[in-house]
Every structure is written in structure tokens, then in C-alpha cells.
Length: 355
Image 1 (cartoon, rainbow, N blue to C red):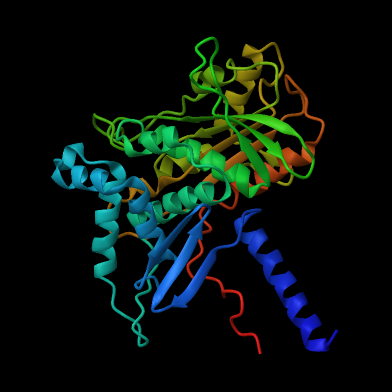
Image 2 (image 1 turned 135 degrees about the horizontal axis):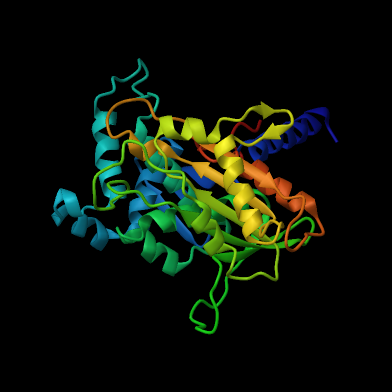
């Protein structure tokens, strides 16, 4: 084989390795950059096209609205501000922020995202990830469209996208079966075959994410009830539990501040919750993996640069139901840390740059 072919193969291998390290074990973006002036993008069984998508983020902003549908968009246009969906408000604030930016010499607009723009990008990329790498559940999509159910569905979407990035497949239960309570889904690790049940819980706050009421300047750290509710659904299988703390940046700093990274030690507030839940369940952890996460972009509704995400994950030494392959849980922890990594550009399409 000629040397330049070897070099091309090796370059592709290194690029793919870097892509997986940044975005997880998901499919690469499939697109055709220019066919009669159009860019085509494949998302599982659908093909989208436009003449306007110079960057991948251009595509994401339109793709998300297409998945929500024109009927939803018109309903939001006609709603009062108080009744509008949080996502619709994020989009309006994001576009207003983008219009303030000055173009670079090459005509491209570039700026660090503010809170609403980052919130849109993160949500749409999770939506795209699940849609392209699994089967986007229509019930979940309906809940995402619903203002009152959006927050919980958003966190479930994050949990599912994280599992996909960690190299899992998703298996859904028949939620119409009334004989028992159901977790969000089952996830099966492709490389080991390890299965875990996945449950996602999000802490509602007055005046936040479309909820009625006035924002609390010092929201609480009460997550014990959420955790105990989640772990009762199926006590007979390994469980990965994702908890969205939904805290403003300053309060999140205290909750996530760790006294030590090596070895990792939870904050005193977090440790107290973990200890109390363990006592509630006879001195065993009723889950195998507990992931606390905080994505506070929605707290920044102005032109300030978006705040960063926080997360803490705990692999239990004394779980209720042990796993056979601990690597599956370790991969979930690594994937949770990839949230917020959203591609800006389209990758080179097959054939680009080949001599």
C-alpha cells in the first residue's frame, strides 16, 4: 500500500479517536456539504437540507425547531410572555444576543455564548444525539414540547444522551403497563453487556424553567426525597440515578465544592445527603451510580457569558444490587463530563481533501 494511503488511514484513525474523546461513542455527523448549493444532513432516518447552514450550529438551531414543529412555534408566537415555553424564550434571547455581535473580517459572526444561546445549543445537541443514535421517543418529544413537563423531560434527555455517549444502547419499557412503576429506560453497555436501569430526577424551583412563583435567592439542597422516590421503582436491578440540582451558580459552588480531588471527596452537604439515603436503606446504597449535575445557563437571561456546568458522580462500594462489569459505570461517569461539548463546525465530508 502506498505510503500516502497509510498516512491517510492513520490520520483518520487519530481524528476519530479525538472525536470520540470529545463527543463520546456516537455516530459522526453525516452530511453532504454542497449539492446544487444545498447542504444535506442525515439524522438517522431523516434528511434535512438548506442553503444557509455554514456551520453545524446553524443546522442545530433549525433542526430543533423542525422537530418541535410549526404548530408548536405558532402557538408560542401567539402566547403571552408568561405562558411561553422556556425554550422559545431562550431562542428569542439567543437570537437577540447574536444580532449584537460584530462580524469578523471574513464575514463570520463569532462570540462566546450567553446563557440562553448555550442552553439552546446544549439542548439541541442532546436532542440530535438521541435522535441520531437511538429512537427519539415520541412521548418524550411531546413532554419536551409541553411547558409544564419540559424541565423533567430535558433532564431525561440529558441522561439518555449521556448513556449513548458512554457506549450504551437504550431499551424502553412499556410505560402503559399500569401494574408497576417504570424507570426512564434500561441501558445496555455495548462492550461488556452490562445492563443498568436509568432514572432521572430534576429539582423544581419556583420562578425557574417556566414554574410559577418567585425565585428563591437561596434555594435549598433538599434532594433526599427525590432520590428515595427514584430508587423504589425497581429494587432488583442495578441502577444509575441522575439528579439535576437546578441551582444558580453561587449556590452550586457550595454544593459541588470538594475538599479533595485525589481521592475525590464529596462536599459536606452532598456527603450528608448520601449518608442519610444510605441509612434510609439499611446501610446500603440503593443505586450503583449517583450523578448530581447542574446546568445553570437558564439562570443567565441577559448578555453575560454563559456559566459552566458542574457534576459529581459516585460509584458505590456497597450497592443494593452489584454489577458484574464496573467499567460500564465508569464509562457513564466519563460521558457525563462531555456534556456541553457541542460541535461548532461540520466535519470534512467523505472525499474532502483527498488527492
